[in-house]
Image (cartoon, rainbow, N blue to C red; front, side, top):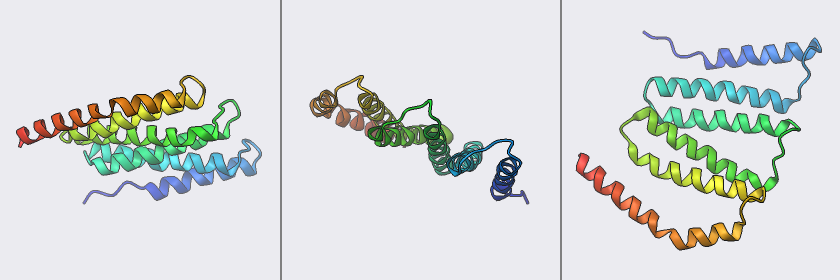
Length: 165
């Protein structure tokens, strides 16, 4: 019988290394960096396991945990400035990447590309809007005008998914 991937063991080892380095004053970090590092390690291991076993749900969850850990780690450094208005767009981007990795892991559920591109595109536009590259009102007007294109793409996806069965 194949042994399961030791997520708990790896997490405890990493936590022990971080705490030991902190106690020896080799590397001083706050709990935010340690928490983010643990999220990155757990999310990365779940993602790898889901991707290698072609299990889309695990790849999705692992991507969300990994990227949330990366976002938390970047927020703790001072050379990255994240405004509070950029938190929701970052979550949209994270879930967009999660849908994309789920599609790539399963390689048969191409319908997941639809929410991936919608979330990635919308999240990117609103993220850039929070830094002044686009006006948020223009984005809402654009989405309000062209939302029927989503119905067209959804219809095309349903047609092709019915023909594959």
